[in-house]
Amino acid sequence: MPEDPPSNRFANLPDQDSDPVVWDAAQRKFVPRTTVAEPKPEQGRDPRRFYVGATDAKQAPPAPPPRVAPPKVVPSPAVLPPGVPSPGAPSRSTPTPSPRPARKRSWPKFRRPKLKWILLVCGLLPILLLIIGLIYADIKFRQIHRVPVGSLLDSGGRGENILIVGSDTRANANPNAPNAGGILGNATDRPPPGERSDTIMVLRLEGGSSRMLSIPRDLIVSIADTGKKDRINSAYNADLGGGPARLLKTVQQSLGIPINRYMEVDFVTFAGLVDAVGGVTINFPYPAFDDNTGLDVKQTGPVQLNGEQSLAYVRSRHYKEIKEDGRAHEDPTADLGRVQRQQQFLRAVMSKVAGSRNPIALLRVGGEVADGIRVDDSLGLWGAIRLAWDLKGINPEGVPLPVAVNGDGATLHLQQPDASGAVAQFK
Figure 1 (cartoon, rainbow, N blue to C red):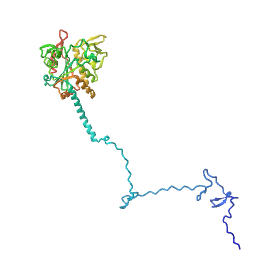
Figure 2 (spheres, rainbow, N blue to C red):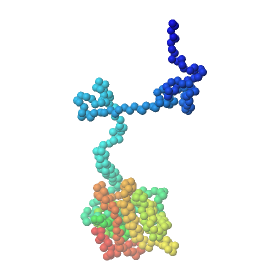
Figure 3 (tube, one colour):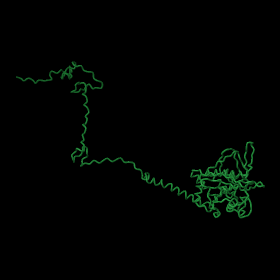
Figure 4 (cartoon, rainbow, N blue to C red):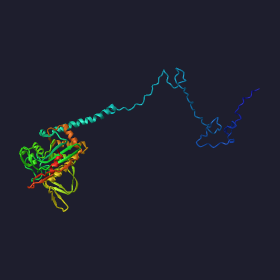
């Protein structure tokens, strides 16, 4: 009996050509396509793919949660047994090089001075400046011309009297210079050849006070070493055998004033001194002028004068003011008014120099004075420094010298007894 052919388990499957089948996930078998409602393919989903094992054959299974590494528990070094390296420590057989620390920016040593060097430089700087200042002062002081009158000076007394002489020498003046008018004056106002003392003053320093006495140059006195009476400024006339020594002796003998220091300055230096301090301010109650010296001030009140204008002011002997009537009125006091103007001006100059805090301006003052000043031969550098310190901040009080006009109308004589009282303040 012939054997039955082997059974085909796929024999009952529908023909794919006549009725295609699809897999039914719910019945877990193939069924005709017509019996299963085919879902509409989702947008962006490939309809030819399906996912096995999902609750919905038409959807992808959910993504598994991300794996999180369990935290490493590092035991405390105190509970680790001896010889057991801590977790994460490099093996001794393969040592791990330690990371290089971040490199700090290092400046050159000369840009990072130590504190002690900074303090040392700050401490030595004032001393260095003082030494430089003393060297400069010594150089300038050696340039000052000395007058051999040291043996005639008085060394006693409570205060110190300084004889200040303004010389009218024109030896160093340039007639073509812009300030020639203030220095040389008008042709009719120029003195005869020779050198005369145009300004004579005595400055007294006593304690913290200062006084100034102006001596008119037309004052008639007995001239020392001659036995004659003449104007006091003629004692300085070199053509008559005079000079600083004779003038100094005449002041001491005729007025009885002891002189401790001698100082002389010419007009050219005087102008430079005024310019070095930036000019001085003088109060003019009226517009003033003098055709002989070139003075021409057209305004009233405080007026700042430069060196040229200052010379024209202090040398003015024909000082005229334009008063309320619009006319020019010449000063009737002549040389006495000139003396008062000189005192006022000299106080302004001293106040300006003493009140200056600008070291450059003070150096300029020293440079200007050194070129034209003359002092007694007994004055040393330290004496000059002490004298400059004593002159700092002074505002000397003007002491008028009582005088009267002689019969000639051109010369003066002491008016006693008032003159003796004024002179007594300088003894």
